[in-house]
Length: 465
Image 1 (cartoon, rainbow, N blue to C red):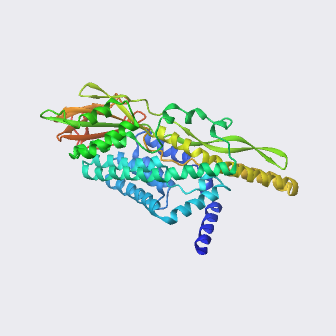
Image 2: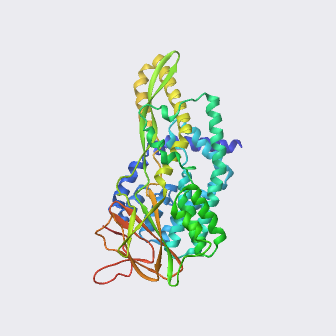
Image 3: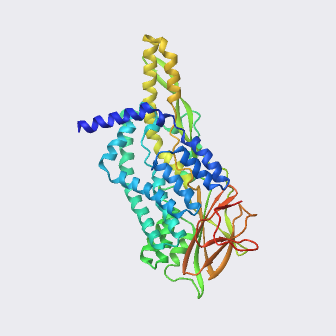
């Protein structure tokens, strides 16, 4: 036990002394990668990502980001390798008794440095998003059985998260009461409270369950003729996003398929935009020490939404507009995550503020010559954690159609001048997914092809302006 504690303290000291975790600005680091992404240059985006993460096999975020970029570039093997590694990391952390102790130790270090020294094991919604996106990648490769495995894992992971979070939030609430922490994020001067108190954020049941994930589960099970498993997926989706006709129709149609001879049940999935960026904002905090009041500026995380992609609410199939239904917003889930995490962030930040001020008060009395240098060091060190899965889409919208077997044509409104996408339906159930970023669209499905003039291509290019 003593050896393990010594190891943890040495490791923690290395993390703090290295300067890398405390100084790394992940949000700024990803901007160049995202610039290439928005321009449709996926190879350039991957190259920049690799340059910023030179040590193999890379951390969790590196593998999450690279997996999504490779998926959209139709690099199935590489995509699977990165996401499989990320998934195994998450599984290992979930099942390791030593991990909780190590994570608690990095959290302890954050009381003295900042939240960047905490081990990043992924936000809950990112863990669920990973296996959902892996299911989509399997569907894109026409591998429905692998998609079934991934979507099943998604909901098993949800159950694990629910059990842990209920206990964690209760413990955090009790700690705050014991320490007399009454400050809420609504009380922070200059903090954009409205972003976390928005109705669409508060309306979420929690930060990690997605109606789209459960709806996709229902569709996958239905396509495999496992209707007893499909029904719970549709019901859960309805519970998470009530009063949505698309979801209610899916459950109702399970009893008797509306398909006629020669028709195919088609699910069109359109994912748009980018997950919001995490940034840092300074907020004045008042601290009383020895009867004297000090004001110190402390950092708190904020979310900046992606505005690069115009809203998409319909697609055109064979010249006819088809309405898209919003089933998920990772942007809203990000904000709900931050809202739920703010009590813990405030608790750690207030502790750090008091420690900083107490040390400055000591120097003011006993070592005034060190005061200015120490203030500068504290300012340089004080920063919010800006890590987060940035290439994750913001919104996921779907349309459910009945189409006749054969060739069809699809266009997206955000890229009206782009060549249409052709797709062929020949099964009873088929799903196709597209991604829109800026005025670019990406399609990795093996069944999707560009409609070119005059000669058809054998495969779709990663992006079209």
